[in-house]
Length: 182
Ligand code: GDP
Image (cartoon, rainbow, N blue to C red; front, side, top):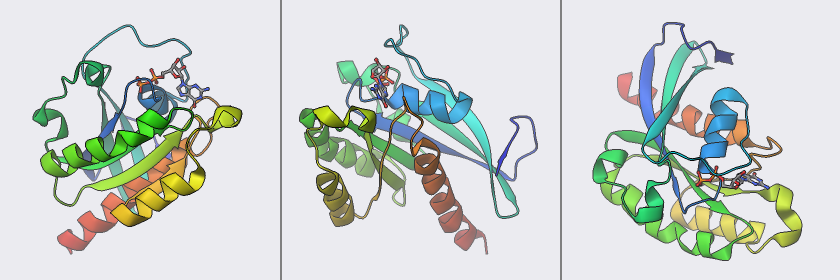
C-alpha cells in the first residue's frame, strides 16, 4: 500500500496534527513517516511537516502532514496552519484527562479554520500506559460518535494503530475527493 517518496503521485493533500502539548503528535508523525520514536521532547519550535505516499486503489496519494512542533504550547497556532487542510488527527493523551477536555476547543478551531469537509480522526494516544489511564475508551468513542469523527486509540511508542489512524483519514479523504472528481 505504501510507496517511496520519489514516485510520481496522482494528487497531494494537506493534513494537520492538533491537540494539547506533549500528547504525542510529533511521535505519531515520526512513526508514520519514518517508523521512528523519540523519547525526549523535541528541541525545535516551529511548523514542520512530513510526507508519505500511500496507494489507495489505483491512485498514489501524497499526504503532506503538518505538525504544530510546539506552537500550541504558546497558543501561537495561526489560521494559516489549518488553511486548505483536508484531514486532521486530533490527539489527546489517555493518561491526562485535561488533554481530552481540550479536544472540544481544538475541534472548534479545526471547524472554524479548516476545510468545511475536513476529515477528522480523534486519537487517544499512549495506550501502552494503560495503568495510568484517565480517559476511558468509551469516553473517546462516544465523543467521536456524537461529533461525527473517526476514532482510534494508539501508541506511538509501541507502534499500535498508528498506521491505521493515518490510513483511515487518507482513505476517507480519497473517498470524498474522488466523488467530486467523478
Ligand atoms: P507533542 O508535543 O504532542 O508533539 O508530543 P511528543 O511527540 O513530543 O511527545 C511528548 C512526550 O510523550 C515525549 O516524551 C514522547 O516520548 C512521549 N510519547 C509520545 N507518544 C507516546 C506513546 O505512545 N507512549 C508513551 N509512553 N509515550 C509517548
